[in-house]
Image (cartoon, rainbow, N blue to C red; front, side):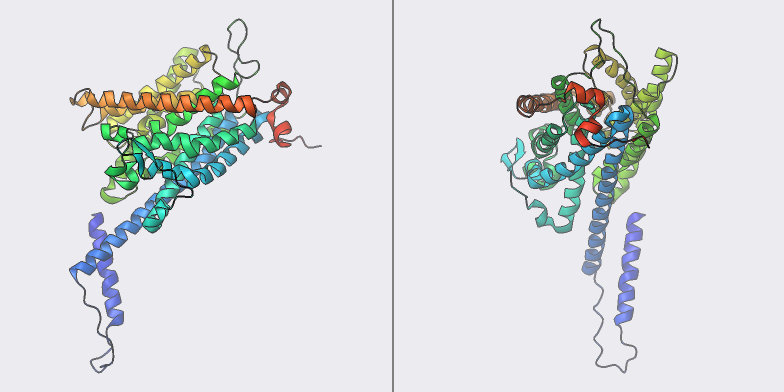
Length: 458
């Protein structure tokens, strides 16, 4: 149907041009004859229209992913205390801005450039790389789309280390993750998206599946956040000497809920937009799979907390929706709608117990970012090996795909956690990682930024 509409539109356009160019009467000997319509010229018009439609779709999807930064800012601000809201907003603004520059300057070339070692990945670094110039406007569309993905990985770290991390140190790390840590793993899994099979990383060559980034984006950001959360330590008062966990409630659940809804909307750019094409309408199945997994994740978390605590918990339910979204991100293009519901349900259960697990391990994650993006990102990547219609274990295709998925998950953890731990350790010993006790007690807003989210009128 789409092809028929495109063909009809082109025919009408060409016919209109021919009619305008045709001589008014036979008595116009000086009028130029209209260029004849040929199959080749018609095919060229159709291909141009298809290409420009794909550019438009990719840009629109990128704009939706960009809007997810507002969602992250609101979720993190809502889940933290009012005295640290300005700090959270500044971090989200700064990591997007710094990350965009860093990814353009070097990250894109590492992720998508000609590989240093063929068949391994890691593109050849090139300052302000001109790879996109070779493809004109398509290159620009692809760059903006991938740039906001890189910014997403960076901003996940902010939530895991909220309320006690130095702003300047965090900004330095944002540059490192978008310029090096994220692009390196991305080159292993997605290198061929730009240069074809010759640019493929070793995970791609193994058949690793991660369509829109459950591991490439979300887990990489979360494992970096885990390293930071361990090194910066828990917030004052979170864990008692007797082992008791003291809940530190977020200041505004309305803000957190709005943030989740914004993220949910943005995910329709994140997952369906990863097609970078409207041809065939595959984005429609991906969109419904995304929706169903998110809904299932929210319901699963709600009922688990209802059963466990006798009351449905708003914070964990919101994270359940995000868990479903993260979980479906890797397998969204190759599973059925029913499988998407199952993936979301399991993610919603996992996120609740993962949050409790990290509390028992005395790892303080104020917004649950490590559980949502790391643990559920790993689950979603594994689910691609279980539920994929063409290669999944549950569809009789053997265990090979599942093993490949586990390898990809392990490589992501070793690389992202290991590299981030080293970088954070160096920053801790040089710039310092944690604010002073006075700053943490009074709040980062006043002492780090000289401002408040909720000033008292006098």
